[in-house]
Length: 200
Image (tube, rainbow, N blue to C red; front, side, top):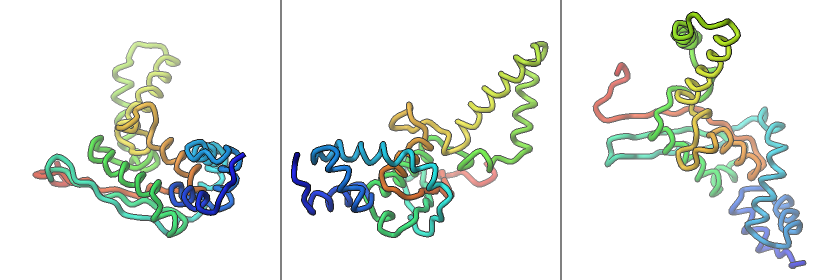
């Protein structure tokens, strides 16, 4: 088995943002193979991600993305537990990908619980109208399916990731929690489009 040096541990810690001992264990478990060690950190962290979701995120970053020759601009705020992780490469990459996602997909809210009740009810009324004449159980299934599709369009964390549509933004966030070992909270975003006002 490869000797795990302090330099290897430091490199993995800098790259992943994970704790020193976690990095050392991951390198030991994978014979010092760097990419496998990162996968090992992600696998171990996924189980812990759920437990970390209630932890306070006092640190974090605001990131920006400008697109289409300066015609679309985005700011995102993402929270994390420590300043060290807020400066780590995986976290910075996530915030930038998030800002790019908002520019490309134009979500209206971060998550489902932010969607006003009247908006959800209006959508349901439209779907019920479309399903008129069908049996009740079919109508309910259609409602669930159409509402899920609606949330995927308008809620950032439910959207398929533009760089990898097989994964949602929430899966991307959970993967990051698995790697860095800290809670990550997508707090808010704002998207500007040249020539548009808030009322448009």
